Image (cartoon, rainbow, N blue to C red; front, top):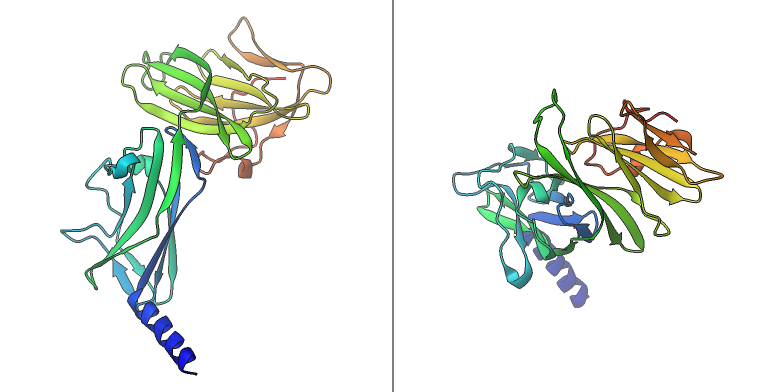
Length: 290
């Protein structure tokens, strides 16, 4: 009986001490360099009353502590980053997902230690999550080519570096696209476009507007065609089947692209696409004809 009383006392004391609990989870452990690093933060209010989380002149109410190799602090891209104030009801849990690459200068390889931190002015106290770790690697370069942005488009005349890279995530080998500015060095996108199977090299071609199209094998006689603009925007994906021969991308004399040896099966379902990429239409405009 004394043991049960003591256990109950410790539980109550712990709950009273942890008036606000914070947890942080990463979508995956292994990332490609410059790939979006999506962190999801859960904040639960155990104070017994509604609270308002807001910035003060001294502190921001929402942030992270990220350290790299050797416990080196990773700097935020903007010291003035803030979120609007947020009301959290008693007992309520709120969830926020952010791309850490947009907030912090994580443009290097290595192991990173991530903790989310919440400041509550009512208690003048920070509440911090347990640490979680991610590993960032460069991946393996498969293909790279430089193309310019045509006249009539934003940033016309600038040059873009398009790269295809492979990166192992667990037991899966994924294909990634990266678009960089040749002059400014800016990385406009890095995102996965599907699994890479059987070491079959993907095929990449540009259309007359220098949109990149990538055709690669994803399953038994199954291929997917992806479109990426010079600005790094994702233009959608379409599935193709090839029961007899391997399909190929061919550029016509007019600069258009067409699929030879493949049958169009339809657009890829949205739930197969990373959350950071815009919603797909039934058939994105400008896809090559069969």
